[in-house]
Image 1 (spheres, rainbow, N blue to C red):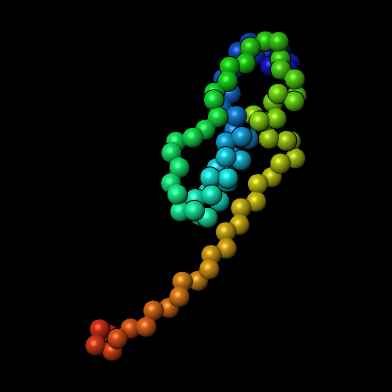
Image 2 (cartoon, rainbow, N blue to C red):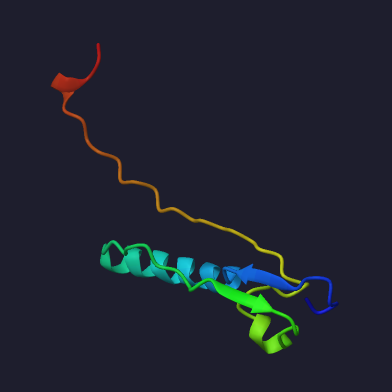
Length: 87
């Protein structure tokens, strides 16, 4: 749009979706509450091109590189009764 090659575009605000996903995951882990189907409103963009500030919720910065890391606590080992062991 900024180069004038696209006249119209839909925008599902992927940057905002990512922020919401992290926020909901953290809240669900903290409260064990299930959240419904949430997400940002789909926007429609038309010429003239929008400002860079308006696109901050839509386009990741050029130098963005996602790094995912999950550290799980090991599950506590359960004691087994000798009568239930396989022989």
